Length: 265
Image 1 (cartoon, rainbow, N blue to C red):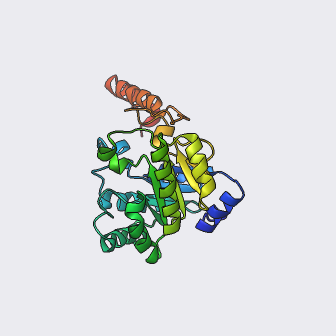
Image 2 (image 1 turned 90 degrees about the vertical axis):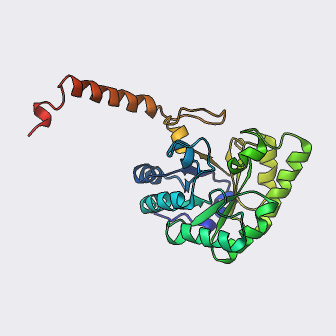
Image 3 (image 1 turned 120 degrees about the vertical axis):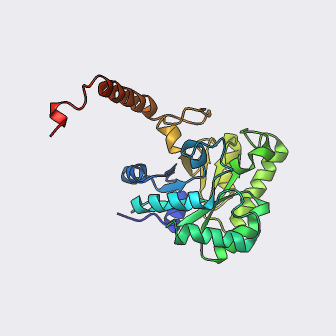
């Protein structure tokens, strides 16, 4: 069983072998993703919405990400575990950013961290990498900037904004990131960025031409039903199955059908 490493991801880009990444927050699902052969497990700050009940990702703390990273890293034997740097964990200054990134590696067991932004975070990324911590970039729709962006909207639709995103990708590449998430970009723009940078691109709502794809696991499994972005494909409908199971359990307990003789000592 070959461990997924950063050089391996670079090799996959070179060989045009698609990379799979999915979010993971707990041991059972992380273990299943690992068994399925998914290359990267992302402990995303999306846990704020799909696990912690927040309206967006902004309230997620370092302690939240460290806790869930510990769990996911125990399940990962082959997959590369990447942990999100939550809002305000890296923006203050470089020493704070390096210390927080170090926590995700040392305490959380992650192999790398992910940071949102372009030019404005370049010096921070360089400082973290100088501390021997790999960094994945993230541009396009950056959920931590939701108040600034004015909502969850496709980015790079005008020539100027598209050029800015190409520049941001090149800046991240120059800063030393090992991969870049491209979120909610027009397909042709994502394709152009993918061709212009030497590191793998991981798309989410950015078309098929990226070097890899990522989805939030709760979206892919049909567990999260608050809203469904256009780019989400539901590979299962577990919410309805779990709800049905809970309803049946509730009814059988109320009617004293459970536990029966088979399930009693």
